[in-house]
Length: 293
Image 1: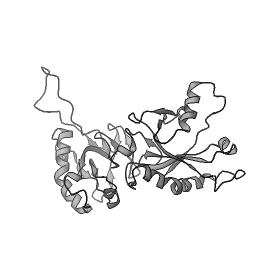
Image 2: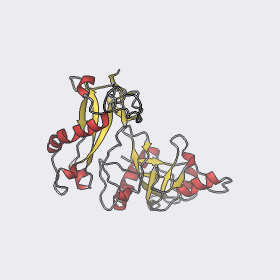
Image 3: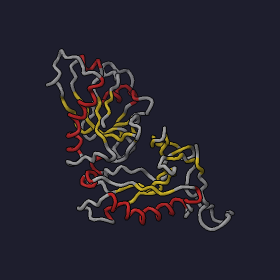
Image 4: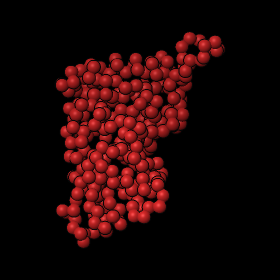
C-alpha cells in the first residue's frame, strides 16, 4: 500500500526556524531522511538516516504532464493510486531494483498542498516508509533504506494489539495484545539464499529454530503452563527473491477454532538481580503472562 501526505507548510515569509526547517524538509532531495511527531506533522525536520526517522526521500517526480497549469488537484481518493503508479518503480530503483511487496518498506509520497498546487507545484516527493499493521500509522526506522534488509521483522519485545480479532498496531506488552515478538531468525543460514524454500519447509525448520530464541527471551519459561504457543512467520517467494530472509518468532494464544485470544502481560524474563542481591533461585525470574479478554 502507499500513503500520501501533505502539510500546510508556510514556505514564504517563514518567521521562525521550525517553520523554515519544515519547509526545507518537505522539499528535501533524494537520500534525505525526515521525521515528525505522530501528532504534529507541521514539525517535520531533517535528521541523519542513522537516527530514527519516519520517511526517506527517494526522488521527486513531476506529474505536470498530466496536470497542467489550470488543472485542479486530483481528488483525495485518486492520490493513492497516482502514488502507487508513479512512485513504486522509483522506490524499487532506489533500493537497488528490488522492493519486497511484503517487506518492511512501502512507497509513499509527500504531495503538494493546495496552495503549492495553485502556485504550480506538481512534484510528488516519492519515498519509503514503514506502515503499521492497521495502515493508519507510520513506524520509525533507523538506517538508510538501501542498506537495510527489507524483512518485515520487529525487535524482540514488540507486542501487537488485538482489535476485533485481528492483529493491530504495536502496544505496551503489559496490556492486552495478540502477539509478543520473542526473537528474529535468519533463514538464509538454514537454506540456500539462492533457492526459495517453501513455506512448509520454512515452518518445519522454524520448529527447531524458534524455541531457542523463546527460551533466551523468557528465561526458559514453559509457555504451555501459560496457555501460550510459538507462532513463527514465513516468507513469500517475492520476499525471498528481494533478499528478505529474516522472520519473527512470536508468542501468542489461539482458541480451538483458530481465533486469536487476547494475552495480558509480557513473557520476557526479568533481569538477574545485582551481584550480592537476593534471588529465589538460579537464572532469570519466570514471567507470568495471563490470558486476557
